Amino acid sequence: MIDKENENFIETVDEEGNPIYFQLFDVIEYEGKEYAMLLPVDEEGNEEEPDDPELVLMRLVSEGDEYSFETIEDEEEFEAVAEYIESFGDEE
Image (tube, rainbow, N blue to C red):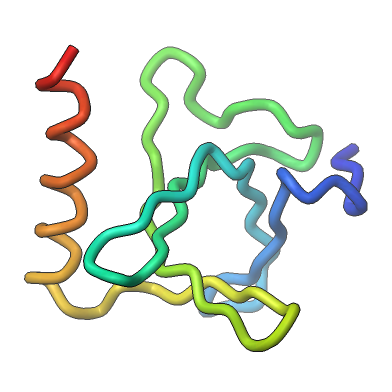
């Protein structure tokens, strides 16, 4: 079972109210905003697709000491951030 006190694990709900779990992979800054790369995991904290992991990209918003994750609705913003992240792999 996921340790809900562990800041690396995030629980959210989908449109139908079902819990979805993520492990925080990394946080990056792009054009003055922060974005979180999240790895989907099951209730036990295991990767859902260990052979073909797929990261989820969300905007990280801070309100005082509290943080929340927002879906990136703007396709251009999403593509720009995704390309920025992919450029790190090009440098290696």
